Length: 502
Image (cartoon, rainbow, N blue to C red; front, side, top):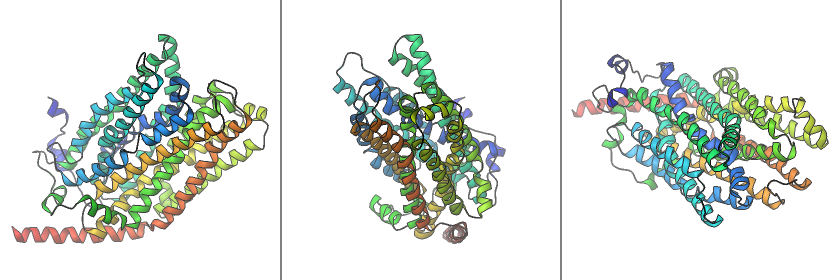
């Protein structure tokens, strides 16, 4: 019965088409996008918005300690993400090249997510800090890595059609923004409601985490059912294209690293992701403090974030249309990165030029409130585009080095995602600490100004640098089409040689 759940009808297996013009079934595309973007990114969006706040205002850490913890706890992730990519390319387990790791990750993430928010009764603050460091490090470096990288590789494997990949990237952006919306709009109200019910903050946060974990990890299970046919035949044999690497001479991690760093397209695209996630984490973590202390409107936090993220979902959906309008994926991405910066900087200078009382009044369903929400539209466009460009970066590695390096490249993508998130949290924590932040107290003008700078200007700087790096990556749809054509010709030659050998 359990095995039957993970298998579809034989007709669906026979209908799988890997040609460059083949269309993907909508359900498969949706479940794969939800499996990657909700299961893996919902917890990290919770971390991005509330972990720094949880550490400082619930556990009682200093902002510097909390920011440093999130940075150094993720050091191991830089090794495990690359190792994960190497293992994906190197091994073929019976449940599938990618599915195996996803299925292992689900119970691991479920348990460790609760551990991250668990406060050990009766221990010293120093012991609790060690516990937080270990659990957060294990969750990011091991548990999440097992699920996120293979599911992104799966998207690359499911289709070679550029148009379908753009649609898949758009859907991933949609589901990522749904996870942001769920974290931003529902998590804090849920913790407050449950804390009031239990009369205990620890219980309130833990039960909220349990509810969100149940919602989060059902998606990769459903995705594992629909994606089996892209890796295995109905009889359980591997698809031939996934076995190519296992029949070649083993290539070391160092050789993979050299090949990765000689692909400018892959290198700059993945390193740019670190900047994007750094700005995202810095902005997200600081917005809670801004509504709590600068705008003094904590009741507006969830409402503002809900509308901001709701418009971001619409922005994500527009990605395929933007690509058609600009006639190039990279050009559309770079343009939206700059537009997104301009919108947030307009809001920043407007706030700086207004009195504190005027800002507080305007954020209570006034013009600043609606501009902040509208910024989410362009934010959603910007955040969704990297997943539309990553397949081209992976294909450039394949074109340049004559081998499938999807696992390794997406492993580096995971490294950059991790590093970016850790850097964003570290910057936010250090800026709070250096400007005299005190939890549950009125903040100085210097502290409030730093909160605003960190929440708006720092992300804008990172976005501009990210845009310049993407320009330097040299990716275009025209070049990508040439790479894919060359890869197809190579695969046809290899197939013909294989037939002659047999």
